[in-house]
Length: 467
Image (tube, rainbow, N blue to C red; front, side, top):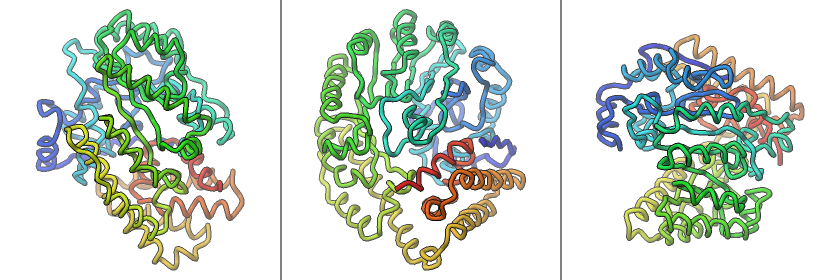
């Protein structure tokens, strides 16, 4: 269940907080707290349309029931814009509100939309396309939302049927001439047929658009290479280790040598056309010792890097490490001395240091967990009650939630419990599930409940039960 919260007045950051954020913003001239409602549209595989990845609770409409035009000109978007003009983040923007409160400005979802140029014609400047979960890989940390293979083989659920069709491509024609940027994710963008059709339309109507692709770099055929030459593609590639066995244990179905060959091609393409090329990688138990080597290799090549610590699945997360192993890893990371002789490399190194600091914060939580004897001796039922109690206690401290909203969140949590236990009856499996979620901050649990349908959370719960 995705919850829509609209408690007026509760989600307005203070003037001092806004001043502090504004001082660090990339777009200091923006007349509003967030550009997304005024410049952006996002499309997700179920057909829903919204303004950004961080506000999925406030849906503007659904294709094909609603057209792009009526959504962009519609009352729901006008209402959201009115909220933002008043610095009111109650219309689904609670995640950004909490990041503001914590002064976590660089992680703030709204900040990602500071880089969208203004559009004087009244059209969106950015469209983000996540039209399908079709993917050639079944990565261990991923879910069926982003991988068709995981959806069918691991989650044992019916495939998603994307509503986006040739009529949708045609419906984009009035918008593409006004776009500045277009982002394509998946699934794997290079194997989603409708994306190739949209790219061809971009080349015809507005070849100046910056096309941003996030790819696993495993599927790179001659048609894709030909398409790349026609457009202004910025590429982000995912690779998590330079050791073939470790890489292939994470990116199931991929082949390391082929991926490295394709990465070399894509990097050469980017250099030839002076386009942005970057690498992102997840940091989990399976590759934690490979990270410095991976980072050093691509940082040395002058590639922009985006490391990401994984919270879920917990069984792969560094949060699940014993405290001594986690501190050993932190010390190893602290001892690294990467090249920082350019602005880009300096920024890369700052990301690595920020990641290491986050691990230091995690270490304190792990130590606390290990000292908790009641937790160590708890049953599956005890753990479930503990998750509920810690979530309830967290909500009691949150003045930004109304009583009805708190009750809705707790009801949603109980729904996830009930649906999980209908699918899993083994007490050992339930223990692993509830222990994993007991380790998470209540704030993160609430964010997941607000952002995602129960079905997705149940799938995540069940994944924790597997060895």
